[in-house]
Amino acid sequence: MIRPLSGLGYLASAVLMGAALGLLRGPAAIAANPALLLIPFFLAAAIQFFGSKAAPALSLGGLSWGGQLQSALMFGLPIAALVLASESILVVDLPSAAAAAAGCGAGVVAGLVAQPTSQTAASLRIRVLLLYLAAGVVAISTLLTSLPPAAFWVVSAVIPAWQARRLALRDQTQDAAKMLAASIRLFIGVLTLALVLPAGLMLR
Image 1 (cartoon, rainbow, N blue to C red):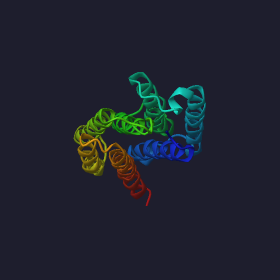
Image 2 (image 1 turned 135 degrees about the vertical axis):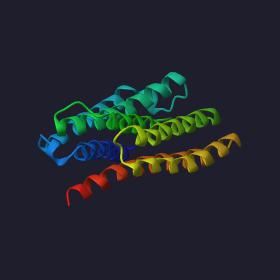
Image 3 (image 1 turned 90 degrees about the vertical axis):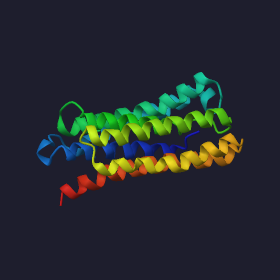
Image 4 (image 1 turned 90 degrees about the horizontal axis):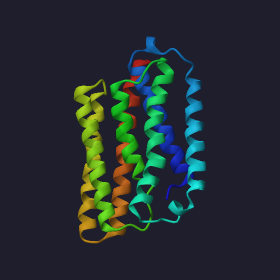
């Protein structure tokens, strides 16, 4: 279950990612007031808040596949959309392939946060595989798109995720869930910094 402040933190990270990608397209590409980024942020926050209120079954931690998928989409899709919208708003243009890659990766991983607190070993292993997939997509995209090379280091999140999978195989689900949560935070943190730092250096 997502704590409100934690959820807002992920949304803020998504806005920062999108804004940084807009800056990386060149300062001359910025065609809108950055304050406009508050519009998609508050919109996504409202969707997240009212979506969680409208789905009490998910808050109770249902373990059905449908419930888990709906819970992940409810949080993951706004994250992905925020990255794309934030870049698009700043440059007043369609989102780039780099934004699509970063948004998809961040959305998949952030969607893993919105899962029941009581988890099975099987569900944990599937979530680890999804994190592997997201890390692979972002890492490969650094070669195929304009994503900064530093974004490749999201693969570092694979290490605690791999440990989480080992613990899940031993049915140590609580320890596995904690390790997976650490890998999720590491993925989002590394990706955010990998985009924000190069963009910040451009403004010097």
